Length: 253
Image (tube, rainbow, N blue to C red; front, top):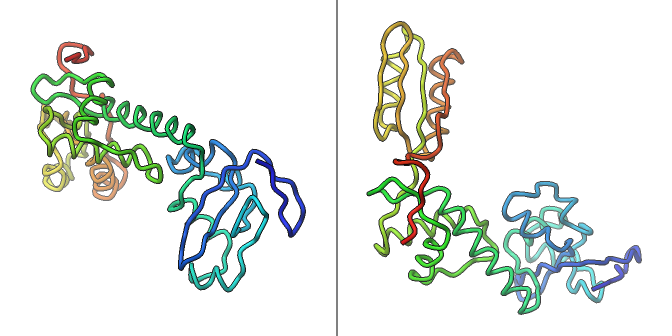
């Protein structure tokens, strides 16, 4: 697709259109192909690499720019960049049926890959293959949402698989090592203990050294408490990202 904008007559090529309907009107932005999903998955963070122009259109293919009063009525502002960001986040990417099916298949696979990488069978401590996760996603009838990142959807898939009791699944545990200054150790440990799944070792000679398992979601909290309570004198080290027994064998059934 190629278009001319009426304001500057710059020809836009390789256009991907994102559309959002608001207050009875259609608003569109012109993006580079393949960049919309990269932005939504937080791979691409430079807006200039996503938008071909920061103008908001009523119809991109015809070069019809949206009127200021329509923008204010629909979005509460005439800030084009702010509006572009909202359309980019909430709008629907306009693609052919074949392109949409390909996109859905790729996202479905990406979500399954993330889940397989982050989870294990809690009974065996072994990870699942991507194929098993894909089958579980089909069993719970999971539908890909193109406007949400694959990481966000992976968390939702984990929840749905657990709720449906399709198979045993849990987030893989993170093994970490904490070193706390002796004078602060007891106080800091009490603040951190609720974030530990289990403590593997605890050494009180001199500074306190603890090796423990945590849910990956607790890592930020632990890091922030460590920094604040030890005034930067404590250390936090990730030993491994998965609690896996008997090597790295993946469950195939």
